[in-house]
Length: 79
Image 1: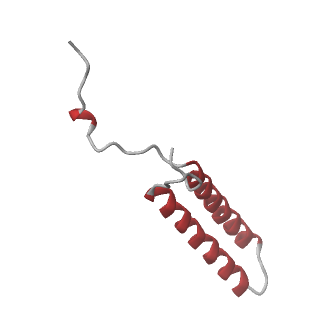
Image 2: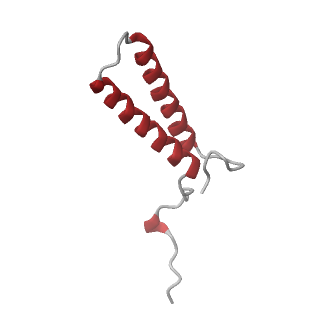
């Protein structure tokens, strides 16, 4: 696993992290523009926050490293 806290993070976790920061920026902008916060808006903010936090958790955990050889071209050790 090569998450964002490893010495060589992969591109997938980095892209996830940048995307979640974009969601958090959009959420704070919408919250600042609203004079009064309705219950439906609070639900939308909570859903966006849950999505952003799950993306951060996935970025922190990381994805398995991709092999250069496709699975169907790998050598099988069958004799």
